[in-house]
Length: 191
Image (cartoon, rainbow, N blue to C red; front, side, top):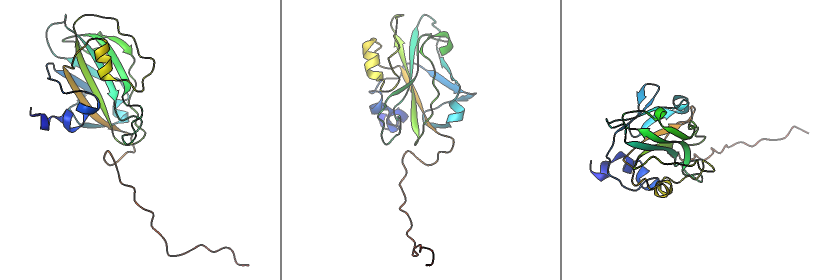
């Protein structure tokens, strides 16, 4: 796929979370029988339960690590918690789903309070089975640093979706309308 039309580039996942990489694996993410594609829009109620994450292939000796982050926390206009870690699973065998892996950080459903957040699933191939330690906190996780620390190399695939609260509307940013001025003034009670 030409780099300019890559949905990960258009959605700025490449840049904000990942460096450019060559896709070499296929991962399916399913929330409540709905398979995600890049840029899918979901409300918080649709992602309250852990998704099924399947890695396609036939060699169960190959292992993978899954990272799920929100680069827009707490708000897209001020992402001071970039990248908020929602889920971390290692040792997932190829041809299986994430439930067969070792859950390092339990799933926490996305709950954006402002704006539309990109929620990114990143899959890394593991050369060996290894002990991965949970980070001390979820906010300000760094996928690039994590990959470098555990020698995971570049991602083999990634998928993202857009998430917003139930009452959310509009796009990733919305202009603020100025208040309408009125031509009348309140007067106090007659004296």
